[in-house]
Image (cartoon, rainbow over all chains, first blue to last red; front, side, top):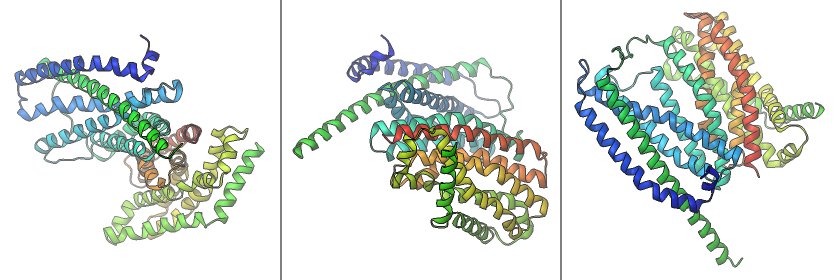
Length: 244
Length: 222
């Protein structure tokens, strides 16, 4: 089974339909395992129970970047290989990526309030995630503005790749800027390297989040394919009504 | 080569003759700098301190203004189709268009910056630093804007979307432009490192911008 075999949307729908329940089940299982590990893990000696926000905050941050990388690969698929499912994959990933980035920001703010005494500081990391979120919103805006799916896909692919090149530059600049403007000492979690009792639940949650993304992405891709079929059918119907 | 020169001359002529585009950008720049003291108060010491940042912000916003004309005008009158089918590589053609655009809209902003610096109580060192960083940094803004202009060229309401897409990408230019200007005045870092990084950003965007814009035009207009 090569990747090109999936180019047939009907075959993709059959295969993904068979795969989806298993993926969803694995996601549920991974979350159950992760949550049980979190409950078993000790509270932080300084931060108490609030440190457990980390277990949803950090995986969300990882996914926020991973999903942009996924979209960049899909963008290459659109522009270079012209794979028919690549733009479907890119379009389905964008809102999920924006949602995980927002989740990372919101959980970070809720965590920052008790720990730093403020919801927001202009720290390098926070600021780069905020910029990433803005870029996700830009991609979503471009998807919504161009009506024809194939043309929108190619425009978004160019934007995604430009973003992929620029994101490291932005990250570097913002880090440089924040060390210039602020002492870095306040915001570092000055704890020692992560203890296994924290690391295992963190990795378990990261796996669960990754599976969740795969499940949601596959489901969203199926929805997008069906949405395009509906669009085509409606266009044909309109043509028939116009007597062409 | 002659085709590119012709394109450059034509674009500059159009920009100068039609609608006074360059002067409107400078006027907008002046207005932005004028309204800032109304928002933050007329304290000259404070204005001198944040003056470089105000000038950079004003120049960034002013450079956004004319971007939708960068390719949009050619799209509307059909000359973009000629450029697309010409033997000159599209990457070079859009790079020349961006250059002409910078010469007619970016360079006037750079030239106006020292005058506006007087309004913000900047001393000569700060004024020179801001003008120098603007001269080095505004081409990057134009080349980044070129990508946005190419992506939104066929859209009827592209202007606002263009700003939304482009502004996050201009953050590094803004950071290092303001940092280099401040470094020349107060420190703590020397002027060299941020300024060289700013020049590097301009060079990077001069490569990426035309390539991405050409790809967007080729794929977007068929």
